[in-house]
Amino acid sequence: MAQTDSQDPFEVLQKAQAEGLGILAWLGGTMLNNMARFGTEFTHFAADRLQKDLEAQQALMACRDPQELARLQAGFLEAAMTDYAGETGKVLQMGDLMLRSALRDMG
Image 1 (cartoon, rainbow, N blue to C red):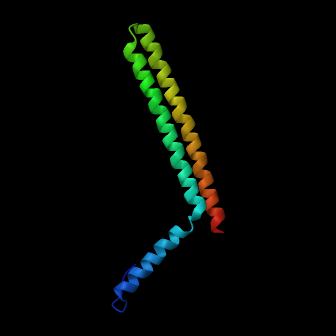
Image 2: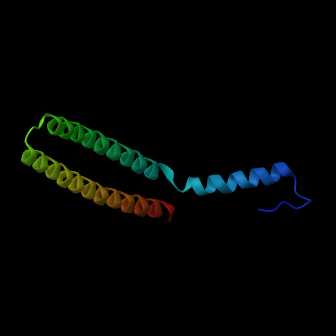
Image 3: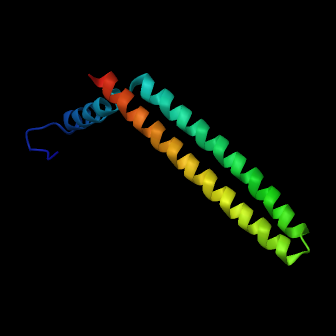
């Protein structure tokens, strides 16, 4: 927004803040709750994956058989890809629901 000479700088700032807060106002409680659920989902997924990664690392380090090592590595990669693909699907669904609920609350 460009300021003209006749506008008070404080009025310009107030108007810009009001416009910015107006954009945030449509988020409402529903959107904030959805964002909290998203954060919780991500935290649980990350903690679960970290635990699985540590378990896999321990198994790989303890392994002394090359064939078993290859099997463990393949199993780890397959499980990780499955987990990440599943989580991606969940996140996409959550994002869709977040957007739909925000749009519903707007109008």
